[in-house]
Length: 509
Image (cartoon, rainbow, N blue to C red; front, side):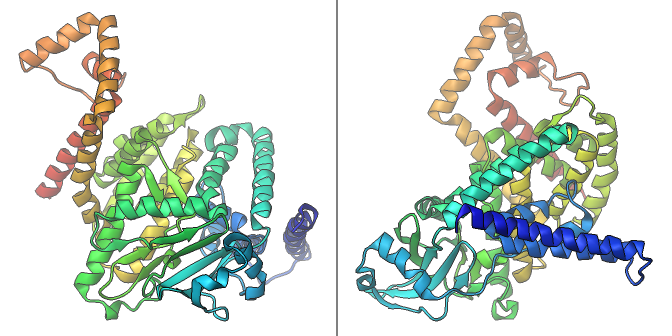
């Protein structure tokens, strides 16, 4: 599809939305009855969803991301955008055969014993998936990219980036809090492997290594990958949405749910690399088999500092500590010059008891993140752009697991995984390069602050070193030196103390 044709399609979709909105206004001015404001908002949101679905995968992903951002769109839009899906009518196999020939060679059919060209396993605006059997008898899934879709996606990314830049200039105060362009950049970076199946295959191999430590999680094997064709082993069963929970034993359902959560938590908080789109269609389950995570074209990456701060946010929520949550969230992002920090802290103090009371058995982190987002934007607290992808991933994995294990306590799984995650952080610090880096930082700091170092050594020798992490004017001298010497020591210590404190209070309850 040429750029001019694509532009006409976008203009047509926007024009349709504008016409519907004009019709609503005329109806109101004419004294029309039968619709209240709530019905109007839902109608507007429904029209927006249909427009995004018509425009294809990039706009669908943006809409899904917006469904986790109540600070940016209305409640009706949030509800409607949660229904967004990328499923289109199947295209004939003849549309995809040229791609197979171009990627695998004109004799591509010789590598297969059979390809079910009549009944695609999956259809989307980006690719179509077929069930096949290799020449050696191996059942596989063959994912074939639509012709010209990469050029369309790249043009759409450029267009949306320009619109975000324009919106940022027109609304600088709001942009200082949300940063539209950075948010889209994070989303586009996560989606890039969807345009190149070689990158997706690389993600699958990395994910398979990470999943090897879990008994009830698996990732399909990559058989062959080119930029536009991906051949992988066939995941058994059906999507978790379509699965019958009664076909599984209680133990099987629980084991799958716990391992799915533990795998995602490890990605968020330790590995810094996670499946960014674990919706129900991307998780296949079958009685007696592990759950298979498929479609690794969209992954998120976060650095150690962001993962640690996010962990502190969720620990604060679980511990019912609104003040600690506000502080951790501000450190996760930033406070604008006009930020209402005290008001935001008050918001969190009021919010957290409600969340904690409603989630002692089923803590909904995705819902919690969106609630915090809504209040932080209102108070001028800048949000880290990665939260858009993280929030989407959180909401997806929790929604997926509830199809199979609705009774699973997310809080219990989170608590169980805390110690391994903290141990992992400490282990990473203790690795050779990390330890040398920390020691060099420490030597540099000690040459500048010998009095502080001597004071810390003296306090340690006399068992008098204390850390007051709640100091309102900043951290004390000893803690500052530790923080300067190594953020990893500081973060590991913070996490360890928080976990021990949380576990003790939970045991007391």
